[in-house]
Picture 1 (cartoon, helix red, strand yellow):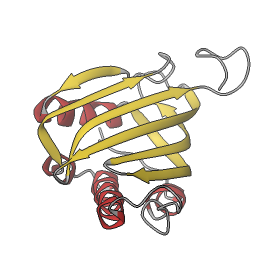
Picture 2 (cartoon, one colour):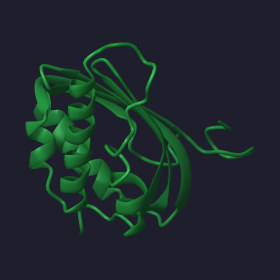
Picture 3 (cartoon, one colour):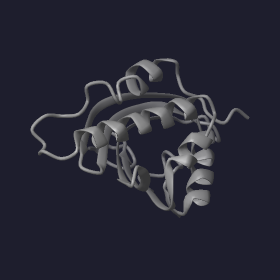
Picture 4 (cartoon, helix red, strand yellow):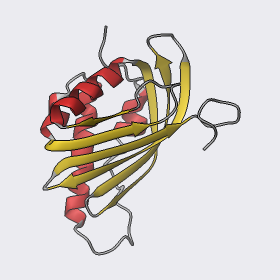
Length: 166
């Protein structure tokens, strides 16, 4: 089974937009070079993941990285993982559970050591063929240029759909 299945539009509508002119103004006088570097690191990670290469992501994480994803069972990727090995293995498994992922970046903010992304994603769950349509946010916290924490929340928009509306 193919490990990563990004729809071709994901490169243009998500990955390419991630680090281009996305550092918002008026967010304080913090280290804008560091913020831009964090965005570029994430963009590099997503580019590598799109080609099925998770080594770039693993190298971008602290040894004690902590990842937690929360959302309805509609998209079977929720859980919590601690340490580089667990987070890399969970990331590989989660991407392998989904097919034809079409993500669109809606907004991104880089403030200090944190990057927060908001996106809409559609695709299919490989195990049962179910089609999903979710809104998600992810917060990446960096320490010394490495990802130390990932927090993600996803939900299905609309009424009457498991997970409720956003």
